Amino acid sequence: MIAIDLLTERGIDYTVKGQDALIKCIGGIHEDTNPSLRVDKVTGIMHCFSCGFKGNLFTYFGAPETPLEVRIQKIKNKIEKINAETKGLTLPSERIAWKSGDHRGISQKTLQIWEAFTYSKDPKFQGRIIFPIRDITGKTVATIGRLINDNMVYEQSKYYIHPINARIPLYPAKVKPFMNRVILVEGIFDALNLWEKGLKNTVCCNGTTQTDWVKLSLLKLQGVQGIDIVFDGDDAGRSATERIQGIAERLELSVNRYELEEGMDPGAMNRDMINKMRRTLYGEHSTNRN
Image 1 (tube, rainbow, N blue to C red):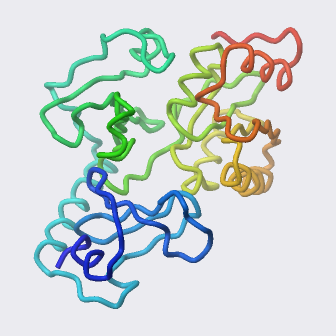
Image 2 (tube, one colour):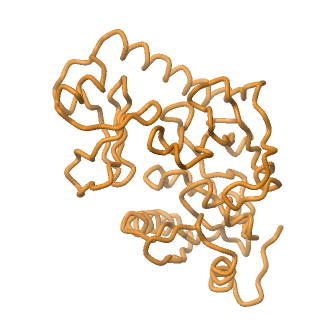
């Protein structure tokens, strides 16, 4: 038995999205009208990106894991993770640098600066724009692929991270502080949008639940004295802001919170909205186009 067999046995509705099955959260912390708990189809490893609940489906239900399939998958995942953390990932030689023009309001030039590419040899990456994620030493520790066509989101997960369970740093890991501060957003396209419109001191955390004192400490080591948190305008975004503000202040980083309107996210902000935010955070005549 693998994880999706257990879901079927328990009568739990799921939608397959890439390597995961998407189900309503079973953590009991929040109502989940929009299913947000991702379960690895084979191993049963699960994580809710809304509330942070995580664990293993087999353990949760007290069911025996299938020895062969699960062990093989766990070994593969562990090898990939160790390689990424020690010597770094080797990007596929058949990758194609992004040359398809602007995408989601981001110019081709900015996408190329962030080293975007496509890769069709692996089904998990087909139809995605992919970004290599490098740590502060320049080593590639992961890749993140986002669906190019949003109409496919019902068939696959919007994002695919390789390797599974990779520890992703704040990105870009080497920051460009402005007035000794950085802007912290959640997703990579949130950061790209702010970069595109002049705020190049923006970094993304690629999942607020994974942001901890270690990642924020690396900002301080690069001379950052304060962070400006700009998360999604919803309950999850506000809750994450509270948590990360507490961590930052314990590290003696000053914190500004720029709260967006309900339902708005940094990736959807237009130039006027971003210019208004820049003036609020850094002053009427500030510019940041380094």
